[in-house]
Structure formats: structure tokens, C-alpha cells
Image: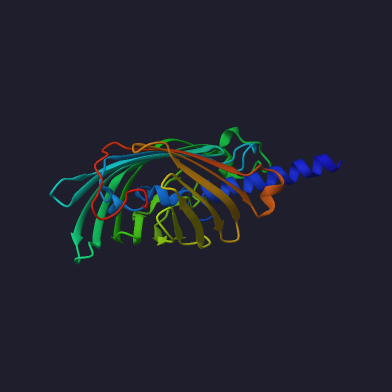
Length: 313
């Protein structure tokens, strides 16, 4: 009997999470990442081209490991500066699967930067444009309430256009950005009137600063705050050390949700590998085994910038 109650509670928690994030009880939130500081292009188009390299990143996140229907996210991004034009171009692809839903977005990014002073601080603004493809099949779920219209929903290849905007101020040791990568409020579910599933506007604030203790040790605190209408404020804080110009090691805290660790190793001037682990501080931790992220990054042009190391941001 105790096992049955526990399993019922687990299914209820999981189903509630799936419905909240995917079926429109509240506004749908975008995927979250623990190693956000190594892939700002995922949210801010103004970041495109700000590294003196053709940069590419692949990242996979497995949230609440071993929990059936838990979120799984894969993202790919690539961006480059256009020499002597102050222009940056980028492309980002995100695939996010939660329970019976799957959302894939493809966006192009354009940025233009302006040099502000002799310290070589820059201000960049960017535009993001593209589309998302939404699929959902709640028919396959176990029915707990046969009168609930939600269990009759099957959405195939619902295309949703996207437009975003961002600004980014950065220099050798600092950066701060404000962006809304999702300006359009697309309705994803039109088959059940009682379900208000929309792709709501997101507003992100990102920032960080590098303190140089000496030539071998640097310290970088950073944050990302995310605001979505009808959803709780999300805030991530990270504190990482850069050691011997070879690897980052740090800790993170997601407000009222999780804590974790991250490490990024620079294998050579072109290639870096990262791993992050965080575990929930909420009720869900009783059933999952934490969340894992794996990242692989490439700097395909090894020419170094004269004003900041691309390894910082």
C-alpha cells in the first residue's frame, strides 16, 4: 500500500509538471541551462559575433534523471563576426522534450556593435528571427479524468513564428545584457478552448565580471534572471574560478529550486568540454537523480583578440 501511494504521488507530481510547462495552465517557459554563461546566444542575439572566432557550441541537458517524461533539451549554436563590419551573424537550434510534448526552434541572429571608449568597451544590439515547431500527444497519457478535454489533444507540427531583440554591453572583464528572445505570444493549442497554452514573452537579464587574482587564477561571478508572465521569477547565480588558463570550476544556485557544480576544460585552443550537475531542492528530488548537462564547444578561428580573451565570455 505504501509503495502504491508513493507511485501515485510520483505520477501526480510528474503529470502536474508536464501540464504546467506544456499544456498551458501557465505561460510556457523556455528551456533552462546551468551552463548559460558559456552559451549566451541561446537567449541574446546581441551576443552574436562578440568573440573573435567562429564559435560553435553543442549542449545537452537531462533534467531529473531516471524520471519518466522529465525534460530533455539539446541545443546547437554557431556565430561569427564579419571582419571590419562590426556585424555578427549566428544560428541557434533548440530541441526541448517534456513528457508528451516536443518543441524545436530554429532562429537566425544578427548583431551590430559600437566601440564606446579607449578601454575598448562595446555596446551591441541584436535581432533574432525564426520559427518553432510544436508537437503534443496527450492521448497516450494515462487517463485520470475521462471528462478532461486535454486527454484528447494531439498537435502535429504546429508552426509558430518568432521574433526577439537584445542588447549587450561588454569589455575585457565584464558583460551585462538584456534580452527578450520571445516577443510573439503564439497560441500553441487551438483544439481545446479551455486550454490556454501560449508561447509567452520572456525577459532575460544576464551579467558577469572577472576578478583577476593573479596570472593563474581568475574569479567570475555571473547571473541570469528570467521573467515570464504568469510564472515565477527564475534566477541563477554562478561563481566560477578559471585556473591555470586551462579550466573553469564553479558552483551554482537556482533560486528556490536547485544547487549544483560545473566544470569546463579547455582541451586546446580550439576545443572545450563542459559538464554540470545540479540537484533539486524541491519535492521532486525524492524521485529524480539530479540533472546533467554536457557541453562541447569549438573556437574554429584561433586568432586571438587584442582586447579580451574569448575564454572569459
